[in-house]
Image 1: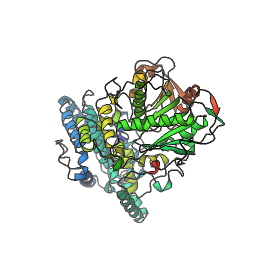
Image 2: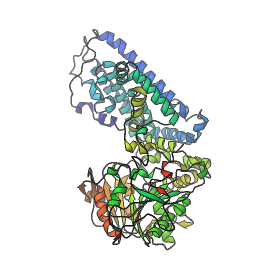
Image 3: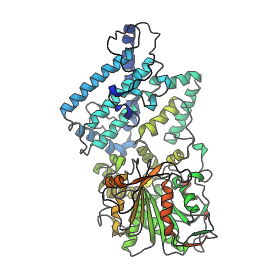
Image 4: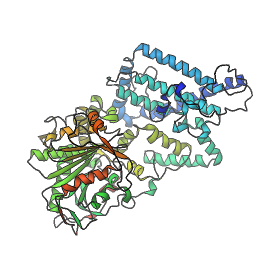
Length: 633
């Protein structure tokens, strides 16, 4: 509901804007009325046909009005998503039965009134229109605030503006119907997801026949835009995904992931990077980053100006980082226990050996934080107190509310994954990437469809989007364990319910200082869920809420000092609502707050190491290493 949300206000509250002319050259209102409606109907049919064709790759959904259960997918290679499609259709069927009949009747009446008002607006400024009532609201008010229709091309020709306004009206009332499903309904989130996919896909901006910007560009370029659009499409078909940025502009190790350092250890799970010191003296106790294995680590080291790696090194820390291997079919046996034992715990052992320190500070980001937490519980069960402090960045440990990703997880879907790849195999990175993109379809899918394939434009140069397109695979056994024990059954936060490396997980055993960052607009890790970590761990916690979302809220460089964050000194309240009520807003980057919290964790200072590694763990190759350069296929 990204762009249409602003149209949810009642019509009478919309401030009138400058009235636009609607094709004044047409001389007769009756003629226009007779021609416009069939044209609009034809456009709607075209949009519907193209949408059905686009959905063909995913199988036949059945007639939408009756919300029939999904038929078996026609493409056998897409069979893995059949449980998801069945789950969505079943949720729609169940949800519709929960909507009160009288509420539907009220929605229908409101829709009829607004449709009548829209029609009056569409024809009010035409010659010979018999408008004896008060001046209707200008037609563009129905699409005001929707960036898809912001260009003047949508308003210079009445038929396009009318089509966009009609779409906006239908989209808004379709979502209004979904809002009638009770919040307590377990199906509501899935229905919202399904409707958002359907509504966003049917936007007239997505199709050449109803997009005046694309048509205008075709004329202005004398067909060159069409030639480029076909080239873009063919190139993306070879990649198997939509290009979001000009990928030729970036190369890992050349202009992204450039922080100087060395690979000092590697195994089948990961390479360990040790970064070159930037200060003469460093903290006695080193730091280890554990990034998510679901993404490449260099989100933490994009460019020198926005690199959290550089920032930490400049603060006087000896920094090590886990660079996970991008698993292939040969690695399809990797398990969650393997990532913990041969991944996180092994990295901790190597860092201790190289630094000759009994303790270190650790940081986990997203899924890396979940891996780290279960590893720390395992170490505590063994009586190992190697960790001095922990930082969790946008990490879920309590999966009661899983945010937008919850739509992909239920018993049927998890069982399907367990049966297909749970005992061996790989979850393709492009499938994971597509799932994440579908959570924001207008911004991460259709925006690029329009620009790349209708207008023939080259995607912009953007490091964050390059990283986003550099997906990673996940081993099936590890992925299946993760889905069941976290998203589905929420065992990790319940002492003794989950087993890792043969030992019961108890997050209360993490009895060291803990810094917890959540971000207020995070749709992957809701901040209210990340907040619960403060009451799960045994150590003293500091909870900080950053502005923006899952990535932009974390990568907020201190040197730019943009945005803001919230802190609440003293004892952490029981609920996130109580915490936010007491919290104070601080301008700038949370990096500064974290650096101040981390300073006492250094354990004093020593001379910076002159060389990476040691006699046992010698440098293997320069950072960023080979593993991060492996592309998912």
